[in-house]
Image 1 (cartoon, rainbow, N blue to C red):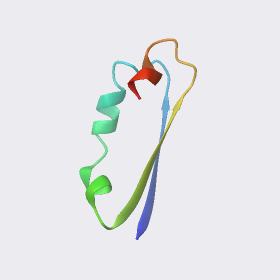
Image 2: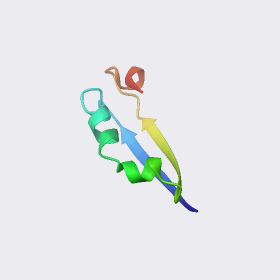
Image 3: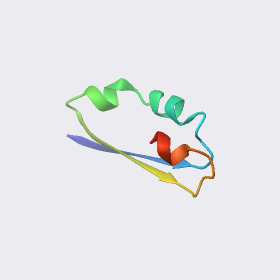
Amino acid sequence: MKKVLIFVVAYHAESHIASVLERIPKEIWDSEKYTSEILIIDDASADGTKQDL
């Protein structure tokens, strides 16, 4: 099984973080070929980015 790590750096991303995550192909999440994890780092955003995660 292949391992996939998706690393996202978020800074003032409240308005578009959901669309970024939606662009990850469904095959990555719903396949038995991959073990997937996502790591999202909020770099001290002053907006509501971390609340959306």
